[in-house]
Image 1 (cartoon, helix red, strand yellow):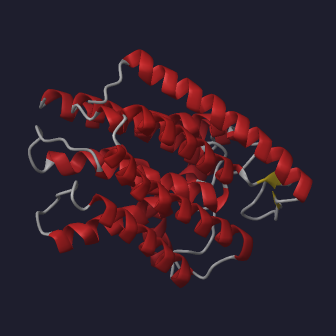
Image 2 (cartoon, rainbow, N blue to C red; image 1 turned 120 degrees about the horizontal axis):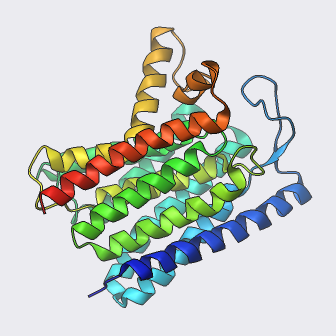
Length: 315
């Protein structure tokens, strides 16, 4: 049986952070070499200079390599096969995001491709995840959860460091919940995902030297959705067992709902780009970019610790 102690978890986190940081640094050089840059437009993209946007590719490679190493260490070929059933759709999601970055997919096509990713994840996990006990309903819920977190993380990629900090915190909190519940392999993969986000964050904190682009946001959103779906909090009674994942992903969920409702009330299409996110509202109130991100990160930490407390108290 695979186990990981705190020192092992720390080693995974440090190693993945170093690998991610190195690959992101390399991606910056490549992006400059081939001019794969995010150009300022003075409206939504208000950075002072063009920023490399290949960070998402580095993120996907860093996590995939780390995950394979962790899974190989587990020594279970069945577990490795099941994990690849999640990793392959996540990489596909990154490719969809890359195409969206490069060519600008229509909202309908974007959602359709995200749904395909969600279906693949749901099918890979359908024997592990039992939400209502009715397979068809559970599959629909899983697909919607994956699509929501893909778009939620993508929408949070609006201020330097925000999307990276969100995935870092949510993954660490989910790892703690998994560890308390005895799901040590899930905990280890969560730590690896957190380390991947941390390595990117080293070069994405304000003022950012690199962006993750849609490819990184789609990949991280897919993996965060898969991570939270696999949590088996068997000692926690309903409805708390359903509330825990919502608490772990509270920030992308709340920001997405806030933006969608706000835009619909104004008669604006929800997929229209704009500076109307929670981070922008905080910045408009006088906070710096860094402080607005820290404020939202503290909120996510609070809800994450609430998820851990619910799990610990009932274990």
